Amino acid sequence: MAVFSKPSILALGLALTPLIAAGPCDIYSSGGTPCIAAHSTTRALYSSYNGPLYQVKRASDSSTTTITPLSAGGVANAAAQDTFCAGTTCLITIIYDQSGNGNDLTQAPPGGFSGPDVNGYDNLAGAIGAPVTLNGQKAYGVFVSPGTGYRNNEAVGTAVNDEAEGMYAVLDGTHYNDGCCFDYGNAETNSLDTGNGHMEAIYFGTNTAWGSGAGSGPWLMADLENGLFSGQSSDYNSGDPSISYRFFTTILKGGPNLWALRGANAASGSLSTYYSGVRPTDQSGYNPMSKEGAIILGIGGDNSVSAQGTFYEGAMTDGYPTDATENAVQANIVAAKYATTSLTSGTALSVGSSVSLKVTTSGYDTRYLAHTGSTVNTQVVSSSSSTALKQQASWTVRTGLSSTAAANGCVSFESVDTPGSYIRHANFALLLNANDGTKLFAEDATFCPQSSFNGDGTNSVRAWSYPTRYWRHYENTLYVASNGGVNTFDASTAWTDDVSWVVGSGFA
Image (cartoon, rainbow, N blue to C red; front, side):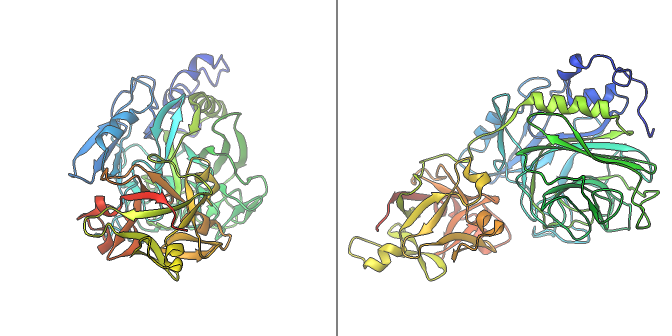
C-alpha cells in the first residue's frame, strides 16, 4: 500500500466540479486511494452502486429483507423498510460493504468484553432509531446504544502493520457519551487488546482516560489501542475542538510516522485539520504501527461496549488520501444535504397537557400507568379512586429533557403529584426520580411516542436512548422492553399488547 496517493486529477489541481456528483468512493478512487470498505445505511457511496445497503430482521416472524438505494448512486429505500417492519420491530443485522470486497459488518462477537446478547455477542441496532433526510428523502442511520456493536474480523484489503490508510465517517455530533469506545475503523482480528498501535479507528465522545481536546468535548480522536489520541502526545491537543455540529464529518488517516485528524460540519462548510504530523512520541508502540485489519463499528478493539453514538456513512481506503481528495469528499457530503426529521408518530402529545395512559392488554385494561414512590407501575384507577391515586396516575407532558431528541418531537413525563420528578429508565426499569440535571438523566427521561403496535391503543412509547425498547407493563411493573431478549420482561408473548397504551386526559 502506498503512503501517498498516485497522481490524479485531484493531485493535478484540475476542476473538482464534475466529481461533486460522484460518490465519496468514486472521489477516493480518482484520488488514487480507492475504498476497500464502504458502509452506509443512508445512501450509495458510489455513483453506479445499486446493490444492498443493509439488511433488517423483524421480530414478528424473524424474516429479513435487504434495503437498496432507490436508484443507482441514490438514497436508501426507507419506504421498503417501513413497509416490511410495519406493526413490529426491526433490527439492522448486516451493513453491507459497497466496495466489492465483501467487508460486511455483522453482529460483533464477544472478545475482551462480552456483549449483552445471550451468547455474549453485542446487541444489534434498532432500525428506526436514527431517521434523517438526504435531499428531502427519508433514510435511517445506525443508532448505537451502549452494548451495540458490529464487526468483521476477516476483512479483505485493509491496512496491516504500518501500511497507509484513510477513513471517514459521518456521525451525529450530538449523540455521544464518555464510554469506551464509539469507534469506526481498523482493529484487532481476535477482538482482544493485543497492544499499543494495533488499532487505527475514528473515535467520537468525551472519554478523557487517555487524551482530550479543547473545551469539554465531545472530540474527534484516534483510537490507536490503549490510547485515544488528539495529537502528537497522549495528553492534550488545543487544536482539537469540542464539536456541536448535528451532522459531523470525521476523517482519520495514517501512514509510516504520519497521521492526521480532520473534521467539518457535514451540512455546510469545509474541512479543518485538527492535527497533522508525526506519530505519538511519548509512548512506545505507535511508531511503527502494528495494525491488524479488522473493521469495527460502535465498539473498541477489545469489544468494549459502553459507548453510544450514531453512524450514517463511512469508508476506508487503500493509501493515504490527499487533503484535496478529502475536501472533495466533504463537498459531496454537504451536497447530500443531511437533515433531521421527526422521531415520533401516532397521536401527538401536547406539551403542558396532563395525560393518563391506560393498559390495552386483555384482562388488565382497567389499569393505568401510575407510581408508588419511585416505582412506576400500573394500578386500577377509576372516577371513584382517591385524589392521591388519581394524581399518581396523571403525568404532565414536557418538552424532552434531551434537547437533541426534543427538537424532533420526543417528550418527557413529569409527575403531577411530585413536581420536578420524571419517569426515567435505569437498568431498563422505569423509575420516578428527581431531575438531577445530568446529561444521562435527560437522555434516560426522554421518550418518543409511536403509533401503537396493536392498533387498540393510541401510542407506544419508545426510549430515545434505546430505540429497540418500549414502555411495557410486566407483572404490573414498568420496564423499557425489547421484543424478545435476555430479560424476562423482554418476552415476546403479549409484547405487542403490553407496549400499547390509550392516551387520555389526566385524572388530575
